[in-house]
Length: 441
Image (tube, rainbow, N blue to C red):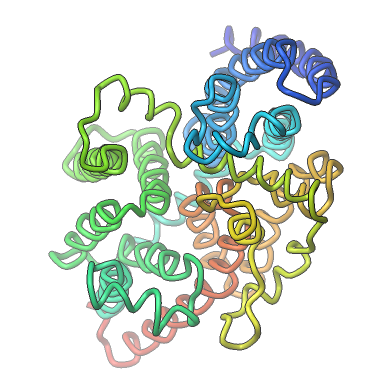
């Protein structure tokens, strides 16, 4: 480890000095020229080297996960963008990726560089994660009544995706209550209370069956968040507790492997469209993931939208967007504005909304504003709910991280301030009843 520390710092310094120079040269090109593509390869090489050293330094936790979610869009853009293999069905006629290749590549690479430095400066390595994972592990089992109630909430929100009449409720009668992905988020947070709940057959079924149901209905982004949480929790058990592989660890590893397997099956189903899929096509899609392609194309469309039409003010509307839409006229999210105007498949990389609100300046301030948006809720929830509030906020951050970076911050803010607060109040009310009437066992 000492040898790694000796080479890590010099390499990081060299990359942090050379990368801005290459980015400046890259930005001068403005279009997808031969030189721009070659400079893109150099940028990807530098970021890839930094990425390797970053994940070794930060270890398995929030810092590494966030960098992965930034790295893969850059990888897909630089490798597959020039050969027309990023959202080809959408990009073929529009050419949005080629037209905005430089701004997009610069924005993602710059975001990665600054974001990684912020993680080091504010010490968001594995110690940050272990602070909260330790709290989750220490909580033990919540009461039986709480476990049952939150289990049924998780089951109910999962089965909103049942094909046919019941699933149709999501798109009609109850949509205004929690628009967007609100019901997915309600499931994720209910799942947290089930995870720390009283052990039993109902809890075990919910922990395994409901994520599989989500995956089979193409809701892989939420389940990816759960997998990230399980990975960090398991790593904590190995590292801090220093325990051998026992039945508890094997259960967690088994759940993660099952979720990954079904996610892979879901990917193949999504790719095949009732046609045969080759192994090479499937392997390529694990790198050039369909969701990542959609995110890149939507981000290119967001840049184009700002150039053709005008800037928007979606960042200022966050306070009203947190409130359920039946209280007010719903404001469109940034990715919805682009989707409805530019014909995208939804989603948008984190830099897209900043560009739409602030133009090129938005790319420069994006990592700093993103850091503030992600971490100021910790202070608010700690002030209102104490340690439990902060701990749940950490879980929400990990569980919604893919949707934050690939769709928008509103999902995270709504998760914390609206849904987490409501379920925390419900949990405190149930706990009070359990203690008062001696139902805790």
